Image (cartoon, rainbow, N blue to C red; front, side):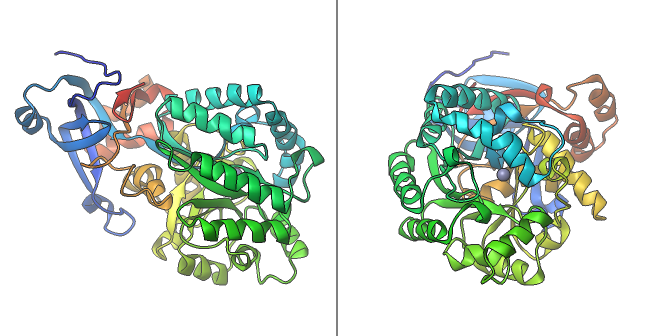
Length: 437
Ligand SMILES: [Zn+2]
């Protein structure tokens, strides 16, 4: 077997392993009908894109001269897509003992204040991408801090690594420390300048980013709604209905709004391409409105249990046809790994009486999150035309997992122990735009 690690070559090459392709949404078609699985499969990659997926024998015949990288029995999957993270909180992950509002004041804001220093922002951006790539995440959507330098640091680092990555300057002009406050006007101006500087450069995407309703004035929300109306091609991200205390605070701050969702709606911050982090405690009216508007709901299960926020209604929201993504919410979330995040999603759903199928979990972490980001035709699926962000997953990465997967008779039985117990040791290889990193 010839092994060729690829470094910037544009030659077609083949990866061999088990392959898993979602052909549909396993919440709607049923898990078994939504996937194509090859135990001896191959993926052909050229110029950073997938050109073919199928049985290894077929692809070897079609491309007889192509160099091969054989990943054995590892599962070739799209890289994970983390639909909500705060890269500036990398260094405060697993901080003890607070609920949301105290957690922000005690841990988050002092750390975020350090991002006025571009050197610190650069150091943490590098560390963040080192950790997330090791965990198999090839696309993340991040909040930065209020500092434009923090956005530059993230995008510079992502660009140097050839990643598809999204982020935006976090905007806050009330209920935040002075050092972390902008204004309605500066939030608009800085966001617009950063959007024009970065959006569409290589594989980078800008995201308009009000942190959440409590830290933005009406004027700021209005300004960011106006910016989004001028640039509907970008995403908008924020937080929605994470904790009861937060919801009560929003009701106090915006008494004119019908509910939390309505605050965003009033300022043009609800629609397709809106990423609503958490979305746990929603009224029936909010669910209907979010669905009608086509917003994406982003489930952050390790964060929701870590900060004690509540149990996302995966079953009800998926059944109702909401667009749902899955995310770590670093550093309120307690793991950089989307495997650990899938496990937490499974546990949260169990506490609500639903057993998520491994196909549903894997779909949420790949194609589902990509769809939530309006990138469902670009990343997150192992199929021709998609960008070649691919991971090889070792389904026997620890003795405990190996003894369990050895008994498996189906792909799902083999995969589920890795979902529940796997970590970065399960990520045997990562390809970004077709290049192994
Ligand atoms: Zn968050």
